[in-house]
Image 1: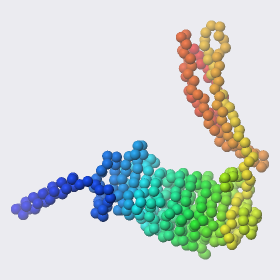
Image 2 (image 1 turned 90 degrees about the horizontal axis):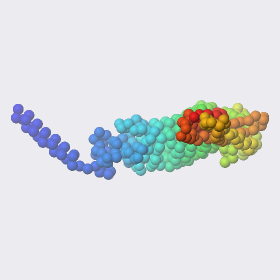
Image 3 (image 1 turned 45 degrees about the vertical axis):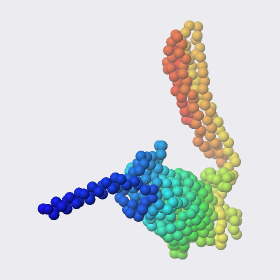
Image 4 (image 1 turned 135 degrees about the vertical axis):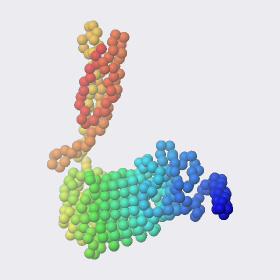
Length: 413
């Protein structure tokens, strides 16, 4: 009994000393090796603005409040595989959270889904990707408008499937440094990037590529220009549906990509060609350089074309200069009926709103109409004399669009 009591006394004293030691310690600015292994629940909050903090792999992270925005910062270290968002215990509003990547952050070998769904990412050039082999879904459904990944090392990557799929706000992307010599799949890599108009993939060499089906395309979107001059399909590969869903208006290809059914032109499609607005007028592709310069071929015929140099092709088109702006004025008439002797006619006020739209005259004489702009009628307060009250006393402000008709409002006293 004495031995048990003694052990309990010693254990209690040790526990008390340990607790006292922990309470007197202050967090340091940089994580040591031992600190990096501290479980998320034991990380001490040093700032009242810190909503939560923890550890992912050896990377410390914290969420702070900055005005109406939450900021998630990933600090130097090695990240574990898996979605950053899914691993957080604190429930962030991902629509209004900025993700910051500090220098010295190392991406995991398996970076599947790593940044998916984040709307604002800062510091991507800081990320060390030299060990990554899997980038599938890495930016899936991200809301970023621009991505500069020009310094990323992708020399070990084999999987880029769905990497940027459903990035519906993405307008500009820089992938000029991408080494794709070991990549085996790019299936749906840019699928449903509805605002992306130009893609420079001229650095993409693909000697091991096995699948690039539906690499581009989606519902209702198009690409003005894609440069994939070094892209190729290896011998005996089954790459045949790269452009099956993609609508592309101008395309540069080299000698290594063969036996490909070209995107099907859509007459009437408006696109940008080096700052000049153009409209598609037919179903053929035209070679802009090379031995077959000026030759026209449809999508099926392009499948048999061979090249010994990079050649740029463009869909049949003409400059979009046969358009004009149509204007329409919509009027709201306010009639005030004073209901007093010797006044038979109402007092009339008019409010006018002018809207406009673009109209294009097609070659066959038909017209293509753009969307109407919007204007509005101001709110109107009826005068309030001593001899009566207006009904109604106020006419509300109203938005005017292409569906709005002339209106009359009567105010009686």
